[in-house]
View 1 (cartoon, rainbow, N blue to C red):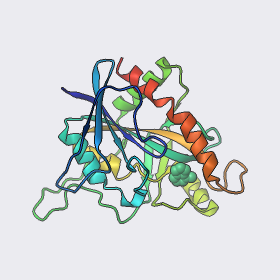
View 2 (view 1 turned 90 degrees about the horizontal axis):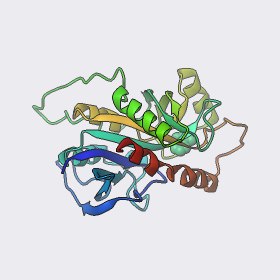
View 3 (view 1 turned 135 degrees about the vertical axis):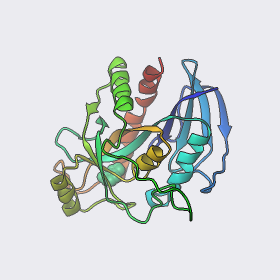
View 4 (view 1 turned 180 degrees about the horizontal axis):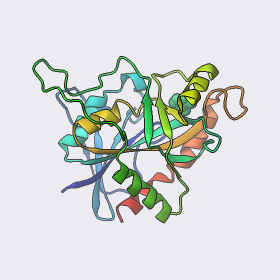
Length: 246
Ligand code: HPA
């Protein structure tokens, strides 16, 4: 059965409630094992694949995720559309905790990650176009679905992706803001670029877990609050995906 949509869950999203006919697939890839078994299940009679990016117990930090194995595994199941869900810090004034955002741009500040499938000796070298890092057609589908589900989502924003796993300093966030970033996360790259190399439509649904360092008048970022915000926001995702597949 065709996979209509794949979802890669980030911090705060380790499973996908409400799936029917659930099946778990433990896969291997030429790049090693993905973060976790892929869960397959139906929503509205359509097949969905779900993968927890950090593994189900959140045991894999952002810089140690095998992004290539994750994207390859979903590709090998036939997925042609991936929504990457990311916990982020909000920088822009209207992007406080619990805001949902479908960003339209990104700046990659990560380093030392495997960023491409073209790095075997003799492999074809490809320079994929990343002018629009998130596929407009999939972004539009996400936004329309959220609207149908009655869930407020901000359309657009520039996603800065840092190395982690530590959070940023206030000065680093000021630099991100000067660079034009509106939100900051740790995992949308190289995921978006790898999906592009495999011609998979990819979009990001960002859940604001906290004000980014030095924003929103807070002195520090407190982890329990982060998880409370994520728990609240993650509960809205099944309704958005269900509306996407209605
Ligand atoms: N910075 C980077 N990544 C994040 C943050 C943050 O403040 N919050 C959740 N993921």
